[in-house]
Image (cartoon, rainbow, N blue to C red; front, top):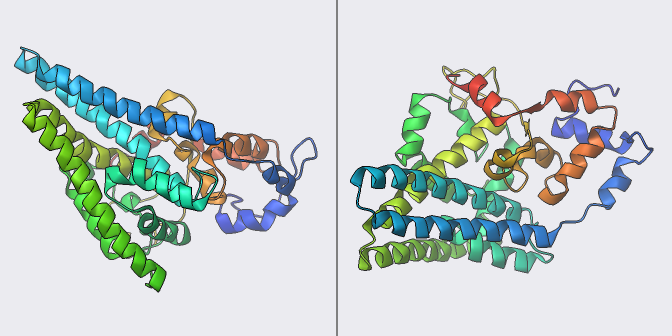
Length: 330
């Protein structure tokens, strides 16, 4: 065992990984060289998300044509929840694109990200990349740009998330805090972000206008709830479960007091693979090696499970439900 308290702290891991060897004698650096993104799988996974958006849209039309108002309300709410869940699923691939992992070239990575993912969030990939990298640099500190985990999993969290208040706060924060310094390149990104904002707004307004034109008012409501309420709720909840510590206190303002670093690995399964899509269910491993594709994280977990730090790795594993229960009210 290496002389370290936590080999899964990023700095600690990078200091010991050169000495990591799997049970069969394969060194970590040699293993890492074998990892390549599986681009057909990535394209398939993103396409599945868009097919589910189409399915939710068709379901919304079908719901609107029902006779029972009570049934309409129940099914419309269910459809909006599913739509928000699916958009969160796709949003995780936008994160993957911020690490240049959805296409072989950086240029096409960003083009595809903006076209199929950024349009949903009205956000340019270069702008998000700038914001997101601060999360990796400042994880666990008040300077973290992605800080949903600063909030306790309590009534206030649910209320602000489900009413859209949290979504507005996040949008305004990311718009006004892209990074520590603005260079000429970053300045150009601000202009691109303005264009992407207009494109995203135009996309959503077009969907809503078509729904209203064809008198599909229930579909319009489902779209507004899915994107405006449940998508930001699922996104904030996912991040909270990934990074909030069991030691965290509602009485502490983590915008001023460091929370401390923590990342988790969640179990496999359909829910974990969709709620934590694009490798978020192995989020700890992503923070250790941000440039490794999510299509390789399972192999990375398997490799580390056969090294001397396997016992500590096992301690980092949980399920989304177990984390939810432990953090509820804390």
